[in-house]
Image 1: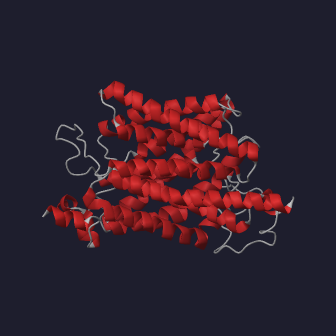
Image 2: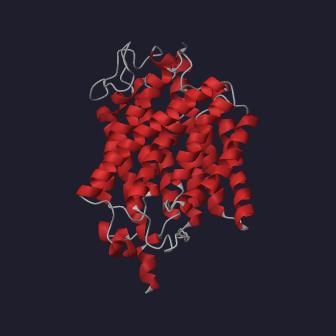
Length: 416
């Protein structure tokens, strides 16, 4: 391979790594904006903890747990290549990864993905979870659960070899990233319970408005930008045709998801809800992520439109079963993640009944593993140290009591 092409590929992957890193700003803004002012520091603290500890855990063992080099004849379920990240002999040359990037770039790009799974959970459990058990959950979920699931497909495990060479397909992580976080979020909010005042005694949901919708809007736009790296980088090179197609399908699905959610929520509730519009965009992005490289522009629009409708119906369903998800994380990342994964068997280059079965198998395997492990971790924390703050702390806000500071101290002082 020409040295210039190798360098161009690697630079593109590093740009994509930076874009995925920037997504954490988007997640933080979105979570802050859709929740109350009194819990802002708590949410920021959790997000910063996830990024810093997530990267260190991925260095210590996560990368080699996710890419263990399964031996021939292995079950392809779990293996470990050792602690640390010693680069192989050809790690900085075009011989590594077909000349798409170096070993170091590979580690950093994949490490940015790893932290996302716990960030998804952070939004769902906002405003009522104790910080210490959340930190323990993050360490276990990012350090062990995410890389094990990732190894099943991206690390050459059993999902990648279903049916011989065909196998389960998840281009950039509708299941392997988003659903992993979504399953964890679902179990967490079930065990944690709803915020005070979210549901009436008869089970009717009450809206608890976020304190900064402009910030939530900025968060979604940042996430959309970050998806250029999330999906564009998953091409694993700067291939002109592949990267440009992926960015087109990604953007069209996002736009279609937003429009569909806006129209559906307006029809159902007779008001133009901006938060539904925003989550519709995210639903379209999650929905296209599994097959962004396989779809035509028209198919991407269809996938996004369906994801947008799913957002509105999914949020209503979560409320109906009396689960409290302040930011809509379960609907966006789990339900739309499942939809996007199944869409690979319904649309695009791999569409077919057999592929749909592979996709269903992958969704089921990941779902069972994540639900069981998340339940064990969170239930154990609930029984030992407790996972929910007390009533007084929840009413007063987690910022002052858990962190001893206020995100808007000048504003609060001026109110008096």
